[in-house]
Image 1 (cartoon, rainbow, N blue to C red):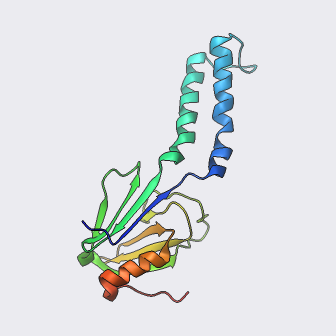
Image 2: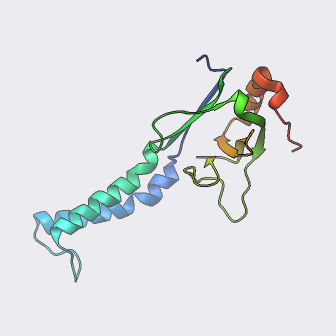
Image 3: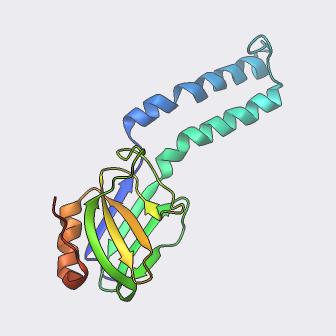
Amino acid sequence: MNPIYTEKQKLMRWWIAAFLLPLPCYISYGFYQQAFLNIPFGEQHMPTFALGLFMIFMWSLCLYPFFVVLETIINQEGIFFRLSPTHNQFKKISWDDISSVKIDAYREKGEMNMYMAFFGTTDNVFKVFGWHALEILAEDNEKWWIGTQTPEAAQNSLIEIRSEKLVISEE
């Protein structure tokens, strides 16, 4: 598999960490205070065991964005992508299964698109960061959107490999 185009996007941004970190730090302080100093954390404090479980849950929730990575590979066989840690294997969309591909701004009414991770629900959207996406229409009319931060490089690789399946958007 000789890749013509590869891209690896990470979800974590400094402002996400700055927003998420205070709560687990505060809960950890409360756990330390209650478990080791024997000072109740709050007026109606929860049991130390439950507070410890809640602290572990909050830290895992806070650290999860550090591990979200979208990898995209385009080569002669097709388009491969993986959104880890939710998908361990690369998903392959073969060129024979693709009707058309275009690079376009992914706009969905009512959704914040700039900094949001989609996990391939019913719309087959795999996007971590940015406004642009590979819009893939399969032969069976199934649509896929795979986010990209480098739309020009992705389009150039698509032109190099399969120009007959590429649709140039009018933006």
